[in-house]
Each structure stands twice: as C-alpha cells, then as structure tokens.
Length: 410
Image 1: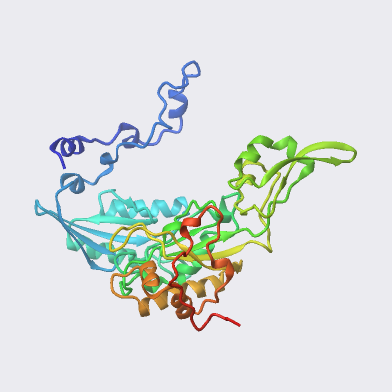
Image 2: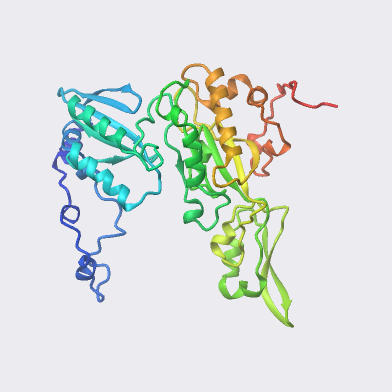
C-alpha cells in the first residue's frame, strides 16, 4: 500500500452529519426549492469508508501480519506494530427491528467504544483489543436469548462451517416472490445451528436464498442455494392492463421475448392488452415488475428449487455457477420441512465424503455429478438438465458420460 493511501486513511475524520445528534428537521432546513440540488445529503454515493474505522483498525491499516481463527466465531489479528485485535462474529437475521439494532449499539458502546461492523453475509462483528474484554463480551452475548430460548447473538460463522445465509426480501417486502425468505432461512439455520457454531466441515459452506428467479440473492454462486420458482405464466388482467401499464415497456421487459401485443373485446369494447407465449416464458416475473396487471404469484404452482456447487473464490479451482439438483419442492410454511431435510442431506453427505478444503462444487465434479445424485439420494429428473436455448456452451458435450445404477435404461 502506498504512503499516500495510508496518509489519506489516517486523516479521515467522521463527517459532521454522522457525529451530530439526529435532527428531524435537518432536511427541511437544507432544502431550497429554487435550487433543489443545493446542500443535498443523499444520492451522492457512499461516504468515505475510512471515517468509520475503529482507531486501532485505522492505525494498522495495511499493516496486519496475521489473521487467525482461535475458535469458532472468534478471530485474532496481529499487526506489525504489535497491536492485537480480537473479533467476535455473530449471526443475525437480515431483517431486524429497531429494538434489535439498539441492543447491538448498546453492546458496541459497552465493549467496543461504539464501533460495530456488518459483514456482507449479515453477520455482525465486534472488535475488542484485550482478552479480558473478549471474555466479558462472549459471556454477555451468550446470555442474551429470545423468549423461546434461542440465542439472539449466536457466535460462529467462521472457517470450515456454515456461515450466515444471505437472502432476499420474500413475502415481507418483495412483489415477485415465489417463496418466503426470512421464514425459510430461519427454519434452515435453526436446523444447521451446530454447523454455524463449529468448524467440522471439509471447507466453508455458503448458503444463499433468492425468493424468485430475478435473484437479488447470491444463489448463482453459493455452495447450496435455495431458489423460489414460479411454474405458471402471469395472469393477464385484460380489463385494466392498458390503464396501468405501458405496453411497449412490458414487451421490452421480457428477457425471452415471450410477450406480444394483442387486442381483446370486453363488453363490446376493444382493449389493448398483451399475450404470453407460454413455451418461451421462463416464469421470472419481470413483466409484473413493469406491469401490476400481470400478477405471477400462484399458491399451487410456486415452490422451491435447490441448486448446489457455486462459488466466487478462485482458490483451488475457478469460480463456478450453481447447478440445479432439485427442480421443485412445494411451499410448506411455516417450517418448510422438506426443504430443510434436503439441505441437511446434501450438507451431511458432503461432510462425509469430501476431502479437506474441497468446496461442494469441487467435490461433486471430482466424483462426477451422477455419483453426487446417488450419494445424496436425489431422484434425477430431465428438468435437471441444462437445456436453456442460449446456454449451449454449458452442455455436457464430452463423450465420457457414465451411466450409473440409478439410471433406468429399459
């Protein structure tokens, strides 16, 4: 790291807008109707990250000599300057209440001088600089429980274990979900909590959930992915579509060109509308995003698909996309028992058969996907085959295809 960058980071000071007490009238004071762009404090990009560093992190930026996981959920950083930082990582829900955030801030004020960090997978990290504070912090976190007895702040998510699930909005907020997000994540993590709080797997396992094909979760590149799928094309409300939707925008929204303009007669009046070519529809719900008169949610058709084998890391092997292994599981709120069962089955089979440091996708490719289906006892379906018409480069074109015992060749 250059001296110039280091110097810039050391000079970073907390912006006044963050250090002052909250002023509910600040926006009104700053806003000038004649010059609306003047004094604006939003939509100007992210603030400079270095101003939020704890002092010990800022002081040692670029000087860390080693990072060590001393126990599940606890990391130790040692700097060239001799400074030591202990990090306690805890799992949290992605969607939290203001009371929960206040409790997080209370813990940070008590042990970490008011500093706290969220990771990209919805974990919280508390930084302390001595072992005495570390012990007190861990005891405090373990003592905080929900009325049902589960931990509010379970310590874990490091090393060769299951880290927290990154997921989307689901039924709480999103308009196109095929499944819930928070509910399934809660059910899965309740079942896998032992793997979150330990490091007994061959390598780290990242689980993700997206509640529809638009995938604002990381299901395309996670070891195990839970994906909400629609199985029916959108319902077209012809009587109101032309009043609430811009038809050219609806046509352009379809990634497969399945939507065409149409005219229908309702009560003797001709109305402009659209039609969906079902054979081309991929049930993504993108059209509903553009047009509220094309709802796609369906209580019977919607469900869960499971994909495995994705990763972003280029360690050992190149990054990989996830592959579909279970095309459909019905929605089963509130605990999604079948989905939870299959996630655990895949995880435990991987834990039993994979080599040390081998990610799920690397293990499946080493033994062959046919053997993967056998070991996990997943029934193979033609829907599992990658036959997307624009993805010819992902076909299995090799002649080295191996038929195995689970394949019926009558």
